[in-house]
Image 1: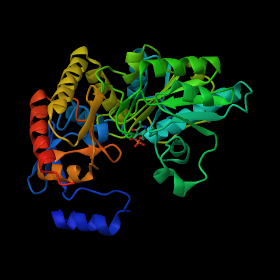
Image 2: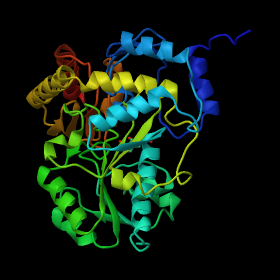
Image 3: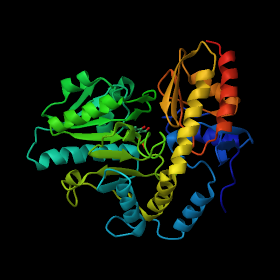
Image 4: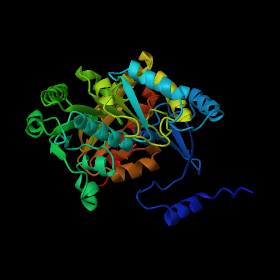
Length: 401
Ligand SMILES: Cc1ncc(COP(=O)(O)O)c(C=O)c1O
């Protein structure tokens, strides 16, 4: 007999007693969702501005997504990369046709994609006999993950300090400062990694000049340019890839979060020259690119690539920035972002506002200490923006220190 469904209090107690306490969870239990709304076990509704942290691009209960997951589940779920399956091959082809890339390596998360990108970059140098070319340049405010390599490229003391020594060879420059980048990129640089729009660091778009300058510096020093589009890619900024505004392309691009509509997935997009430096057995993982996950990702990619879908993201994103900019509150310092990746920088810490959001039927998340980040399902509508702005205005007016 299956165990009886636990009560809301029991669920929270089990979590407190048995789950490793590495997350601070909201004080309710989510049970289901519809569109851009989440519901908890007590029947409360929340307008979702987080989307599982920039993951659930098609929102909740999307009929096509549900149908494809159901039908994929009746087929093969996993077989290993020792064998061919159609969905993985189709997804690789579709990703390459829609990007700069010639080949794709699949993995299971963003961190894994970054970790793999580091290995590809190092291997590309090694294959040329350049065993001295091992440095990876990263930028202030970057977030690339929490494994020992990716963490070395995530320059936040709180995250890094207890885990030293990390991967050697990480070099830090200032984001959006080309002179600072020029000072650390040299013949020892294997790769430069950058988010075209920084997410966790507080929603900071890179400038066109900065990305182009990095491309030139990489060319000059035979270093690879890696764009981390794990958070900003796949339609989030109103173009399929966030870097499109810059008019340049990378050698490697990491993807994850929304690619399979909420199922765990990661992908490393590669030029032919980079991909060809890694040979059978030199990198791999058990679950990656499985037929169920990639079957679903094919549908998500097809949907978010549609020009009407991207135009919708652009339109609602512009409206979000416009409406947030109209809020008259002394607590607001700046509104910035691109598409549906928007940050509201405040003069106060945002954690109390995230908590107050729960009481006002809003799911909100921070990016750093002073920025509220809006990364909703990409199917959000203008009317939801109006509801957000109305509630947020009231919350900011009532905010005490
Ligand atoms: C830009 C960026 N890179 C890497 C990661 C790590 O991805 P994951 O949490 O899937 O391991 C994240 C996660 O927030 C991210 O935003």
